[in-house]
Amino acid sequence: MSWRGKRKDDGVRASDDDSEAHAPANKVAKPADESDDIVVCNVSLLLYNVSVSCLLYLQISKNRRVSVRNWNGKIWIDIREFYVKDGKTLPGKKGISLSVDQWNTLRNHAGDIDKALSDLS
Image (cartoon, rainbow, N blue to C red; front, side, top):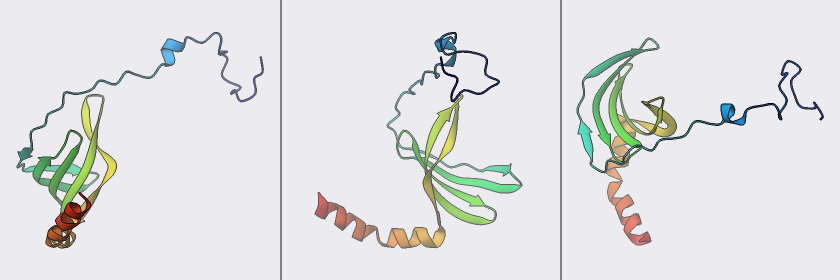
């Protein structure tokens, strides 16, 4: 058997390896909650020396949330996907944080967006 590609300090051969010990953990699906949960929260966190205060929390689907936060003295509208790891729900990379000005611009164009959606349907 060739050792090409193996680390020198790895003394275990593939044939001697117990494959169950290296199998990925099974994912457990959480039950889907289709209700639109709106939570007004006044939680302040000190994370990495940055003050974060959640003003509003809205779950728009199983893994997507909209929240209004006060972060470092500025208000942000955060639309983000979340994932579950080790029983904890954590924010993912997929999402956007809009400033109040950007949110107002988007909100002012909601009619145009609705019209484009109805034209495509």
